[in-house]
Length: 169
Image 1 (cartoon, rainbow, N blue to C red):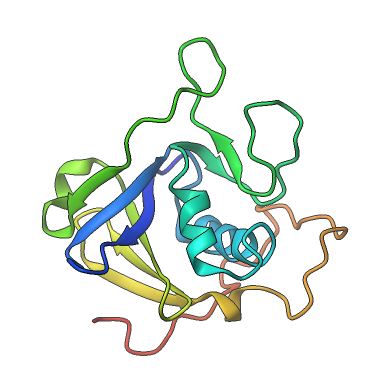
Image 2 (tube, rainbow, N blue to C red):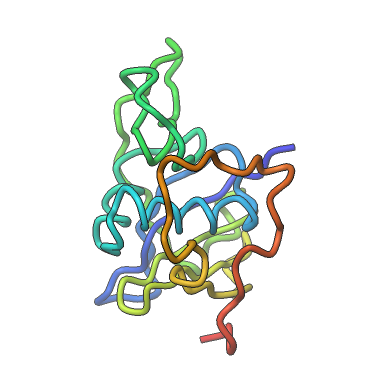
């Protein structure tokens, strides 16, 4: 089963405005939060601004920090960009900009907002309501190794990250 979502960041000057990218598959928090943490720890080298830039570069079929350069349109250590009608990565569309109060019109199950100041990800339901906040430091191993094979999602713990107390803002 699939769950569509948006992943992005709030505008620092207008926090109710979101800039995000669409993700077609694996939009559940049990998949997206660990993927974002691994992309942050690996590809972005724990730089929150680099994480935001990587995520906002494309609309995505799915985020996957174990993606290699198997095809020229894949983004190693980030994921697989959304394919166009020819099966190759589509030319990047403009970033989607919306207000959280209007999120119900997006037809997605989840919205993830990367907070560069707190090194966390806020999780919102498809109608824009806050559902949780996860500290990325708590979601990656202390010494991640790129040579350790990933745990298949069907086996991975659904509670690999602990929500930050006081989830509502």
